[in-house]
Length: 332
Image (cartoon, rainbow, N blue to C red):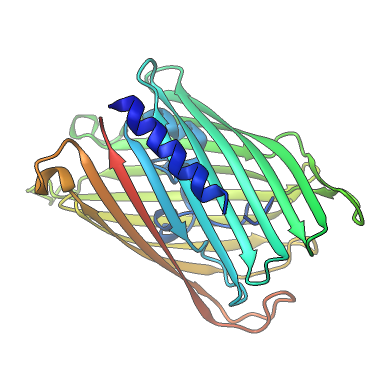
């Protein structure tokens, strides 16, 4: 049954991918992480960890297939962003593999950007995991110019019982990820010079606990924070600080809020101001409702509030941008 599920997931994802903004690592992925203000490097859970910290795949024990619409940015109405992903846990060692695909396009079929990523995360000790991603970019312009390139990402995660109350299952996580370690370029078949891919170094931490006043053990609180450094050619001139909070209720409902705060900008990475995020999540326990093996659906939603700010490529705006994600998880 495990092998059948593996091939079904791969076939579905392959079919979807035949249908991302390449290199722009300031973009977001998946509703849960967006709702947490992009502060996800130290959370590193589920399908979302593929974008923020691949080392988190070491702790994923479920098969996952996911679809997400939107990436939390304010973009033109004729632009769309779609993400597809699968996670395949290894039964022979503690770790998982994943494949994700982003399609960022205009309504005009002559402009399209795609990002294919292969991820792996594995545990090297009971508390330390390492991960990596191979990323392939493709850009289609005007039906003639094709750009493509690839890069490699490295990630790390420390995951241990909490420093405050070890016996009550508090969790402390610390992680980092360096995207485009080699500083590679996108090359075009004609008409354009090679373009450097963005580099992004993220470092983050999260702490998860059950509040002391929570007598029924039905509430869990998580606080997360990230700092990200973006640049090109190993010069990181844009710095953002992210923070997020998640409240889990009865293991079925999730409330989230977060913010991204601009600490430093540059002429290469112009100011976009502070962004505020909010999110909701629902877990539908199919295995309990229909007496099945562990088989659940997760529905997540987030909206992003962009402030009014004069920005060359955004204009004077105050807009919301919505994202939703659906996941199917199975522990077979």
